View 1 (cartoon, helix red, strand yellow):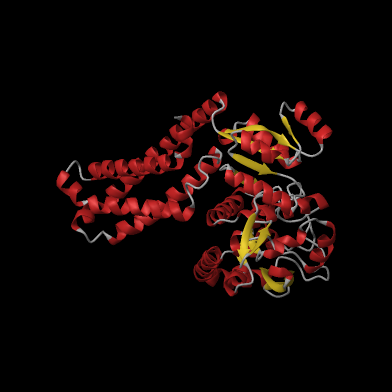
View 2: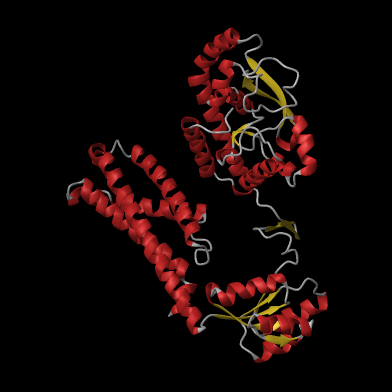
Length: 474
């Protein structure tokens, strides 16, 4: 029962979620309609539509992909994102139904009860299902039920697979042993970790004929065409699946993707969600809407007010324009409210704590990040984004691109008014090379893990930090 349960676990989870959704929809409607069954009957078409909506959104968001092997934190993260998206879409549907007599009087209560009940059932159900999954995994590992596999090559990748399959009981795999041409080294290594050495690589062909093997994992750095042909032929004859691990394992230990250009496989070694047109469209649409809102409702009255105060505080222009490095390292003029007295080092030297160039008003503007607000004009015209790596001075780009690993990778994105590095404490002056390396590391992480919800989180944390105050804001 355990092995079969794991194979259809994804289907079980989909069915469980749909059942919970229907229970929540009926219970929420019953509470909202005060038990009036006649009203509940008229609500059935909406419940059916909600089922279809949930299945569509779960497919779009990839909710159930790799559900069996994902850790619980990622599963709850996916569940949260899907639930919030579902609530938003459900709210839009209820707004369209408000003209219906059933929903005109009860739509607020109905929406509230359905969302609350479904949220409790969904997340409570996740806890129970994950506990069941953990128990089934342990039972499979203890009873040695599952897929029998062999590993070709005693490499780092092979050792990592063995550790996942044997020591962690990963998805019910059982390693029968290794095949490797370096007999002495492999024997010593395999014995040391408690494994089983089965012989040289091509002995695997005969082994597949005589033993029950479900899958072969090839981790060899070199494998000639004839060997591949013989192995694949014998595997096909014995209904054995063959999986190849690339020999760049030691170099790229992060999710990679193989794309087909015509019939040529091309490996992408760094995930970039914003390379997808839909994601880029979502981010750019948000940038336009958000920046337009700030400009119309905030800067329209704040700019004239601050213009007067800045001019009264010190001589010079209201705005400070500085060339900075943008997307693809193209220079652009970044706008700020002027917070310093005019000086010859503005394009070379960062502001430091107690910097005598900063004016009295400028100190307040920098402390509250108000000096950055004109950059929403940069966002609106398209050379910046609301969220992204902070743009650096051209001189700093020239300096750090030579000494900081992956420094230029951050320029794959548009620079932002705020960013992942900034909300994690790496804002303002970079006093040491290590501080810049940490900033770059956070910027690259953001590039590889972008999502709309991550942008919302960064914006929230930015606003929160403004009110809380930051030690590096000067």
